[in-house]
Image: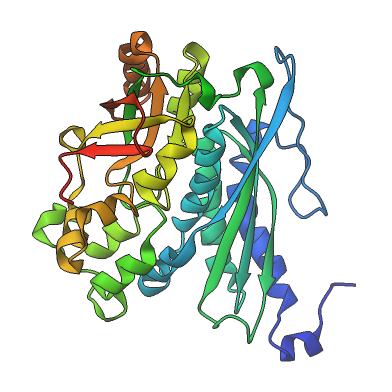
Amino acid sequence: MKSQSESYKEAGVDITSGYRAVELMKEHVAKTMVFGNTAPVGGFGGLFQPDLTGMEEPVLVSGTDGVGTKLKLAFLQDRHDTVGIDCVAMCVNDILCVGAKPLFFLDYIACGKNVPEKIADIVKGVADGCVQSECSLIGGETAEMPGFYPEDEYDLAGFAVGIVDKKKVIDRNSVKEGDVIIGIASSGIHSNGYSLVRKVFDVENQDLTVKPEELGGKTLGEVLLTPTKIYVKPMLALFKEIQPHGVMHITGGGFYENIPRGLPEGFSAKISKDSLEVPAVFKMLMEKGGIPERDMFNTYNMGTGMTVVVDEKDADRAIEIINDAGEKAKAIGRIVKGGEGVIITGLDE
């Protein structure tokens, strides 16, 4: 007999909508199965068979995160097919920092009302992010929670699992004085600091279809919803040839919180502000909000979404590998002894 419950539906949960959402998302999930998925969608657990060929001591690495209040921009513009990319990016970019290759991803969507087409759009973004990350979307959960979330809102979180050979784990204790710091360009604000973004731009009362001259013909809403850059392909290409001394994902906390996480005690990253290419949206945010420049670097990526520390002799080749993979990389500083973790020269204090 077909599963249904009129009583549950009257309480606000339509389980048949859940089944419909699963059917709609299957075509998106299927795009990720080429990376090792071994079970159909809809089971109680996601199965994945890793290829351990050539690995002496495989180590699993996990990371979890959500999209945060950037979701408000999706609600305001009724666009839901990109925030899944953000969710995947925030997880896989973190596990890259220990040298791991992402294997699989699971998502969690909690909503006030299950609208199958909207849920499928969200999962499309997650699947797109998994394809960019060369990992499988092996499962997830959609929870319809009337009375807990407004009908037109949802939350989105997930986690990724990756793998690395123990001898290839990136060890921050290998960082030394004179190492070169490489910065890889971001796609914009990525997925942190949006409570401040929303306040400064007053997004709930702003026409998000306006095209400020500074944004080069793009609407404000489009720029604010730009998905987080996924760095898997360039970083995996780098790992094949060069062993970095440090990799740091520049997310919440900006330069000042994230870069020291990849440095041993007693060393600092000395970065030249003049070497950085700061996108216009950050300059708009700083000027409109009257935000001190140091606070911007302590909150946002400021155009550099990932930093890589390598031996000086490897720097040119590392930059070449990353650029050949389609990203924009350049030397932005060096490792020095002493200091307080991060020194940005030329900064307006």
